[in-house]
Image 1 (cartoon, rainbow, N blue to C red):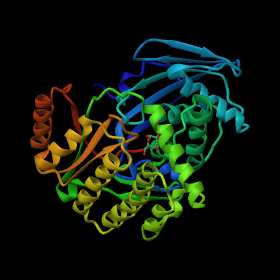
Image 2 (spheres, protein in one colour; image 1 turned 30 degrees about the vertical axis):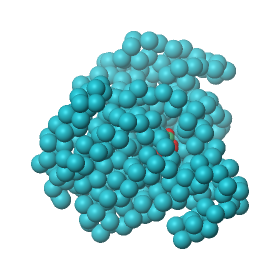
Image 3 (tube, rainbow, N blue to C red; image 1 turned 90 degrees about the vertical axis):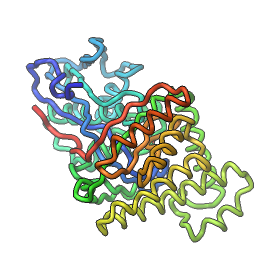
Length: 373
Ligand code: GLA
């Protein structure tokens, strides 16, 4: 597939910005618990070209489908264009004078694969509109605004990870983000130097009940925090976990809490290993994260479990599902010269199980939101 920049129809545009999709190396369902995450940006991105209009109206055209949606300041938009209208809404809510614009969108971020195609769209639209308006809003302040657009306008109760990754990631680095303070550290993640690679396998499992299950997990965590009398599950550390679990009657809730608390610690351990320059050491942490998502958070499906099992059997150092769950992609940490073998093993396991064949590609950490025209 051509890159998103190549796919964007010819302008003229007053500005063109690109924002990437992401994978999360580790730290799943921790962001809305005020915890830690460690995503990096994909080379795949969404590109938005904008031309200023002299009236308070926005049109957005998808290069892929040719569809154009038009909306005014008071309109409630549904479907894919709601991510665009949500950004216009949130910028206006924050008091910014957003000029009307004709937007054209092209993307090579796979849709529905858990790679944050919606955050990429939100972040690129925000960047291009701020540029048209001449507003120099610091990058660090943008993820919360984009998250608010998704939570309050689109109506999806997601955390702040995806918009942070799409906005703030740096090439060659993973983004260590404290989702409470929003403090960040760019952690060098140069796998090639250590003879390693990250293979992304899209399980292509049909997503079902995703948003309902996501909201239920979030609710369960918030109820647990209330019972445990802490602001968020982030405030329970591994040493305090056994005592916290004893105070919860509900077995399902205990499992959810155990995932979040142990997952936060795995992020911290992963960052330590990367700071020490030992990328191989993160393999077991990734695999433990997957087991926790499978057994305690119960958000995996047979296809992603099969990818993980087959990849590990073929020699991957670690493997885990990435993203919200119920399908989507698996990351496998593999010796760079064994990617083909691992991919072949996964394909074989899928054929045997009768699953739709997966997609697979090797990724290196790319740059976050940037101006491309
Ligand atoms: C989705 C959400 C994120 C995060 C992940 C799970 O990608 O958008 O905020 O909660 O799921 O880690």
